[in-house]
Image (cartoon, rainbow, N blue to C red; front, side):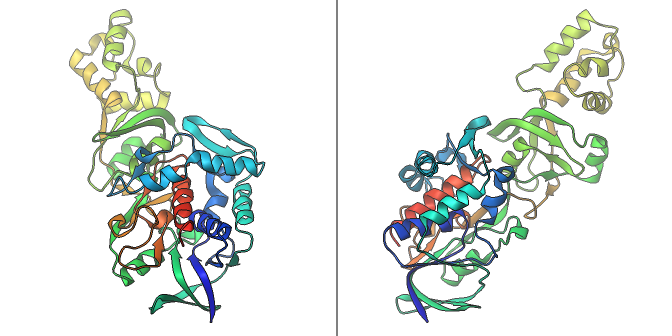
Length: 390
């Protein structure tokens, strides 16, 4: 049986970051990965260019049952720290909307940085962990390629989102095995779906994209929205999906910043002979404009449309109320909301309070970022915090 100072299970963003930091401190590290290659989620992120962090990353960009948990790690390893790492390795990058940073080249450049920083770490891919146990103050990790022991065991296996990338619930199983609680995981950053009746109303709109503001309670986002064959997608829907739960109503403003009732009143006064659908097509894609006129049963001339009907049409545009039937699930979810209960972990070290030497980092933990590089920043920050102490 081989012994290491640190064993990390999961060679994704958080696992590699933790390995690199522990390696820098001279620790003997073994990194185990079930997939044939490390960092599969990094490789496909950002359309292959890796949205590796966000200039505006801060605690407000993260969901958790314990909102303060992420503060310590994010303060001690910021987006500027990771940007500095990227620049030291000579990787060119650029900013897109909302502070999102991407490689000019490929996502592989970020993976190469992490592997270079982790040079000297023993990395075993295509290795399945079959059992984890504890003997005294050591953890025993059984795999299909041997048996290993360590005093510091780090779980960085992520959540069950995008199973084709090799994700699993392994981290939750280990947590429960050692008596830690798990906040029930659900899909995040995922398209929302509708029932057959609603889809019939939307028939023919698949592929139509509009800037929109989508709200759920006091939470709202403003970005592009895309109609799909199954419901709604696009950045604004992915954002709100992390907050959505079954039965919740979302409010969609298809013309954010525009008072459509006022616009329709003005059009009625100036162009009374025009038809509703023609006027709406001045503001919205033609197919959507015609569909809204149909939904509102207000498809005649403006002169013949009472203000009450104008208000109904305006509300359909500025405050479209809809209850999704579900989401596309973990199959397409970019992240998992929920995970290891942070009340059971130290926010400074990521160590389990009741199990000395056991750590959880990255997406495995109940900390989930918004769309736009925030989840990678949590991976870097939590991995760094853990790597400094294991």
